[in-house]
Length: 82
View 1 (spheres, rainbow, N blue to C red):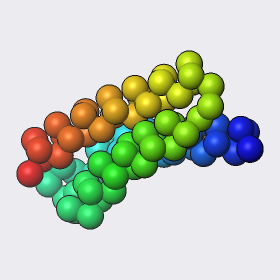
View 2: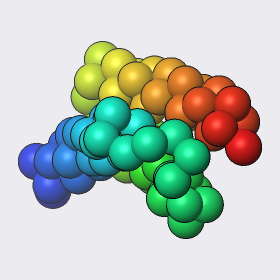
View 3: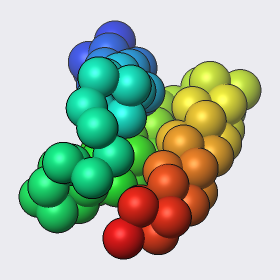
């Protein structure tokens, strides 16, 4: 079951990077909807949860730190936009 947990953690980490990156680079900041901003904040939280389920400690804490950093970064952008 370890490969599935690792795959899920990496997948949600990539989603938490790519979706907000797409959102904030392709759209005008004034036209970004509240639902999109909530989703951009929700993905790093879910990514952190999946990252903490990975059994290898080094990968677990690396992915969790990346997701938490992304959450803080996009929280700042969300507050700055609203």
